Image (cartoon, rainbow over all chains, first blue to last red; front, side, top):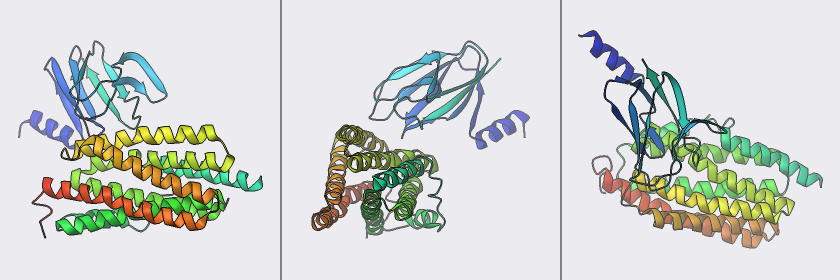
Length: 110
Length: 221
């Protein structure tokens, strides 16, 4: 079995989406969750979040009570989307300001 | 005054329970048992299970608020713990249908409205109209969140209709707490019966929507 496939399968089983070379990666907001919850992308990739819930959500960098300045979508409604390009490597947590239990991570690799 | 202090201490603990679920650990294993039972149930069985869970929610909530209002700390803690087990059962039921992640997302959302009921009860206990009004506003806003969640899970359930049903649930529980605070127990139990019966208005359409969405899982009787 090719090593790459084994690694991808392991990461998927661990709930982590492997880094992708695609320039644009999608994250669904559905049932008050960010899907995938853990995402790995390459530096320079753009992540687009699309709200599938009939309520406003936000995509806000940082953690509840401690937002970071890196990005903040503001609230957007069902069908709306927000995109952010990750220009530097690192682990970036984000959350929804209205529903602070909604939290997820983007890992940006070189 | 001593009663109020005890009440507030208990309510603070209750909020902690609602938020963290620490003492609400499912020691009986009820949640997993119900989740397991949900699979392969006939549509009518699903309806009965959801009705039972939601009616229990109303009954346990009223038991907790009554104990809190009278400052009976130990009784309140036990009622709050039982209420949280019920919350876990409801989330487990949602998770058994829509996946564990959905159940995990549902639980804090559900617990949130219990926290607001605690806030309202605190307002009644302390005579703070401001706190009561804030709690009512939070609860009404919560109704929209809940409507959105169920609409996402089962798109045939209109968000606005679900939100209206949840608002009625909130008002019915508020009437129970108001009667308890006034020591009008005859009225409190009349309102509690109404509140319990009203849960069917949420449980039935939810069960029907789930059964229609997953006919392979929930066969028609």
